[in-house]
Every structure is written in structure tokens, then in C-alpha cells.
Image (cartoon, rainbow, N blue to C red):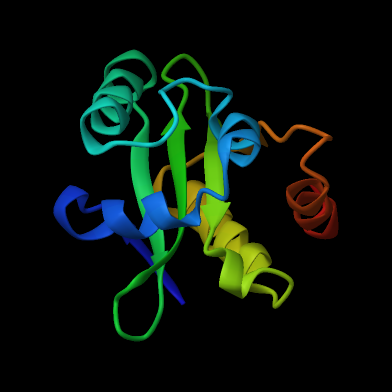
Length: 139
């Protein structure tokens, strides 16, 4: 697994398929863009994140460079704190260690490439699976 910048033309349809219904959508993005997910509002949301928080969108990819996970990352400009958000994984790959690996790579990127001293993330306790992944990584 590797991470790379999100490619709007290539990766959106994968992410769209991972949303397992309205409740899953709300837990993932707190309804920051409408359900069902559509390209224009999703990309407008990513543009707003970029402008407001300097957040970049990333995908975790398999050996064929196909997206298997997604997250956003920003380094808060007034500090050395990084922030991970909007993480989601292809549901077919859950409970197989892919989520942990994606977050591990995201943290490696944050610390080594952006100089973050700390990394924070936003995970709702109701999303038990994501919460378990973060706890397993010591976050």
C-alpha cells in the first residue's frame, strides 16, 4: 500500500461506492456535503477545506494504483500540529489491517514530509471500527 494525492477524475467513483447509506455518510462526513455523494458538491467541499485549512486529499492505493482508502490531511499553519480527517476505507477491505496501514502511512507522511510534531484526528466514538483502529495505533 502507498498513499498519493487524490485524483478527482480517477478516484471519486471509488469513494462514492464506499458510502454504505445515509447513516454511514453522516458518520463519515457529518453531512458536510449532501447525500448521496455527488462529484460537484464533494469537490467543492474539498476546495473549501483547501482554502480554509490548507487540507489536501489523499488516497491509499493498492499495487495497481487503485484507490482503497481516502483521507484529508492538513498542517495547521499557526502550529506544528497536523490534522487527519474524513478517513474512509473500501468496505471490502475492512478488518484486514488496511485501515491501520493507511493511517500509519498518513502519520509517516505527516511527521516526515510536513514536519508535524503532533497529529490530531477527528473520530466519533459511534464509529467504533475507526475508533478501534486509532486506539490500536496509540492515538
